Image (cartoon, helix red, strand yellow):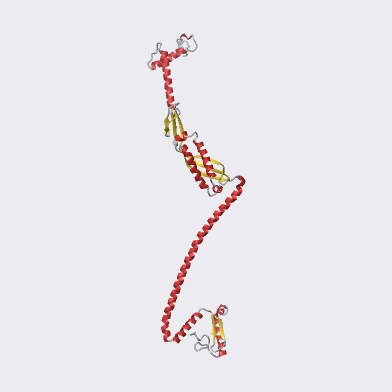
Length: 382
């Protein structure tokens, strides 16, 4: 049933009895009613003149509680695992906090996080004058890391910028005391080490809280106007080094083979020496055995030795020469040529040899004998 229908006792939700006044409720009455309710909750008097004062105190308490909670929650902060936090209390250093969830006094303290584990890169390059009054462009890069957060923040205005200026100074100092050929070719490692050492010496008094992890020599080249000539010079130096390496490799390959040949010749000489000595000892032993026989029968022994020697000589040749006793003709039998003939074979050899001998025998009417002949082969003793 609606509030203004008949039978509703003419009461409206705004407590306007009789329904004569259709306007909004009085704001003072509404606030007083809310104050009375809160006063009843906190033990206050719901009626009387102290209701306004009770409402004001409650409001202040609520505001204070909300402000305290907001202040407390606003003080929480987190430091990452790779960082450390520098605490400033009213602008003055108050300590260092480790990674994790922390709390600070808001508006009184300030936290500056510092990355302690990341390795940072810092490049440097430019045209520089060398010791031999040449101009080269050098590019170098360093890698560094923060080791002391307090010194990194408070020792200088900007530690990274100070390190960059120190790198430029160290690089120009080292390049200015080195020759251009060393910078462009074989002396790059020496220049890198010298720059590292000089840089650490420069930043040490400033206590930057940094450590140099590595120094990389990226590039070094002459000005573009003379680049072609320097490229040719560098190429010639590289060829020189390559030829030296090839010569050393060739020498290392030749020397072992030469030593092997020397060793082999030594072994062959020793073997030949041993062979000659053994042959000589064998000849001596054989002579010692023949000497008693020769002394007993000199002629027979001489003749036997002659025949044995001639047998050895003629056994190694394929040519036969027959000298007839008392005649001037000498028969030559080319057995090697005869054996090479394929048409006659063994039959040709058997027919040719007797025919020739018979012709010689018919002409002289004597048979060749070895005993009692007067030719140059007869005096075997000579």
